[in-house]
Image (cartoon, rainbow, N blue to C red):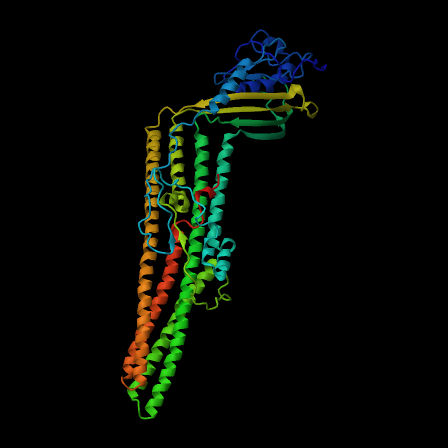
Length: 571
């Protein structure tokens, strides 16, 4: 066989008009595989004039056994190569039309965020521990859902200016297993996006087989050859063009689910940091009570010693001594009881921070820092600052994509496929032009009857979307309720704390007067004990209110979304 001429191409530039050899590409492959057998049997000349020539003159081309498969609608057509053929403009036009169709708009409704009209201002903003923006400018309102420079950012717990709290909070990101679980869940959802996007592209595969075969010598039309080698190497490609947008909708749904997972992770992170700060301030509040009760025990011990001396001197009574001892032991029991709650808060803090509880401890540190001011911003910003709202909104968007996926089932499924390779009985002629074979094909499948299943699934997807949209609005309502609760809590606790401080001052004055009256012999020791018990009760209440204010402040930060906003969602 002589080499092909310089102007000959691997695929001829023209296609000779001929008749259809069959309506599936398997016949073209079979024709390619049988070329050698026909050539050996001398039967090739019998095919001349039939409109199908399975090979080209070997003297003019090395691709003698490769039939071409081109498109006529969606049916594969095999035609022979010829030097006098015309350019395959029909195939190029079909390819261009295919590309344009793949870029068509996906079926189904486009997503629109469910509407919610945020109030102009929060109601419960009377506490001095919150920073409220000035009133809306005349003739216009604040830009909605745009966090301002004055809002909390990043490590929001640093506004409390507590070094030990900062160290504990910083450990959460690397040591908390709950946050790690949320992270891995998000990473799995992100991988699902990549898996869904892969369906937009063709799949390619390859195969290699080497076999020695024997066929029956008594088979019909036997040619006398019963033993032969079969060496095959080839590849296949298949692709489902996304005409109706099903795959694109699936990719978008996966992306929106991944964004919802990222928002869930942010919500877990916010909750853990808020729980850490809340437990820490309650622990420090207990340390302040421990300090108070320790000082009270020392004072009561001094008073017990005094009453015993007075009793020994014949001035006091045994009743005074018994009452002093009773009061002392009561306060000691209260001091021991605080240790139970403190240990529980310490264990909770160590667990959140990922410490080994057998070696973890927090040194006593009474709560004596000022309450910081928390900027609340305008209500419309809350829609972008809370991760739970963002997660619910992204799930709503994903539910909308499911409607388009369900609608796409009403349209036909189209698949394009191709295969090619080399087959020979002799290794020496395996990878050569005459041993080549290939095929192209397309298939369209349309479901004609399903007893209403597709319509029901589409209706189900629409109802699921409406349910998720309602869930989103419900999340928004609860978010505003949460903020108002924390704001009112701060306002009421601030008022209550002021009243309690005045009560402490009055009780202190009453105790001082009663103590002076007792030392002067004007009154009994019972008056002193009563005044001291009242003072201690008010002092403990004041400390408890201070700790509750810090907890409410942390709750407000959590309700506002901490330092997070929707711009941190992955794209």
